[in-house]
Image 1 (spheres, rainbow, N blue to C red):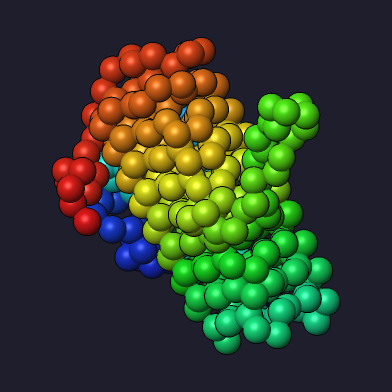
Image 2 (tube, one colour; image 1 turned 180 degrees about the vertical axis):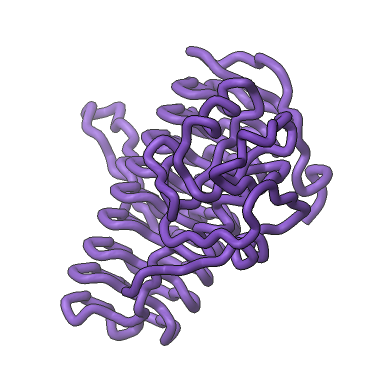
Length: 315
């Protein structure tokens, strides 16, 4: 791949919403870098809207910095660099990265992948080396990295991303003790897994199939690395399940909610819409719409300051 040569105008066109440029409007960049390691050919960002943010910008050697329009800049702050002022610098930088610096995947199926003859896979799907795909359905433009195991009975929508080591559709360890002999009896797992469009699943995450119904992951939801999603769990649309979290069987997460690093959700517990489960929380009872909980056991600590998707009755 040749060296990039991206104009300031091209950078700005990739940003949604209003922006303002301070400094040299003819500047060009070739690389995206952290703000403290950036050079003259770099584009970077600073999301801080405090004096600390101004100091980071002043100390940086970056050619272009996407920064907050809430800061008050002096002319010397952009004498040797160009600033793009926006309301959400992190989001604007993400859009620049997606447009110009994201690795492009050449779609196709690795010759070392093993695929069931009855699997229904869209021609545009990418499947990496040493992955196994059972009798399932996979929608267009979905990316499945190498060493992924997908059991039969899984339906995956369009534009999904499943990273290395993920296991989708395995049986859960669902047992019931025989009170006559004291032995554990295994509950047969005959359900499936339904994964919506635009879902991303991190490496080494396990999503178990339902016992009788399906485990469901809603459209646009993102699940981090090393998560455990139990049998019959329902996760709504555009949720974020952070790495190392565990959702026990038949728990439910409402649309637009967030479950942060290392949290635990008890079986049959419901977390409402637009809710936040804080880092390391152990949730043993239902969480209402728009509530923030954390702690062991988790207790309500406040409310979220956003509302996505309208009321809980919006489809």
